[in-house]
Image (cartoon, rainbow, N blue to C red):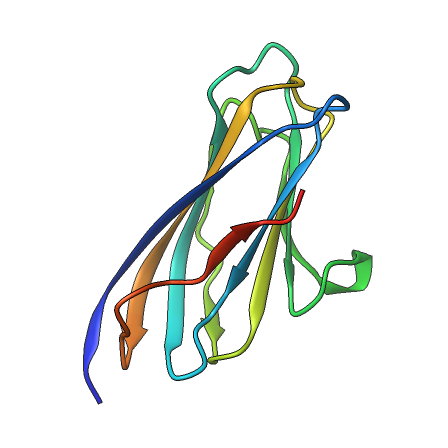
Length: 121
């Protein structure tokens, strides 16, 4: 099994309420060992809260959060994720129209050509 550095970035434009979510799908044949998740926004007139969920989007799946979702924060919580699993990164109450971004770092086992990010709202 081969390994490679994991470095993925994705962004979402926050809606009129300052909310946005990115779903991160781990490709079926890859395993990700995530050791850093960084969140921020290009405009932080209003500081967003940011929450990270594992597996499903919902309070009982919460694995990390920050009150600095706009000005920026980095989580060093380790997440060992198997292919087919998902993370959800959600910003709440930020600046409407701001572009919020997430950066994922770590190691990929059995890397493929593309990662799996998509904005869900």
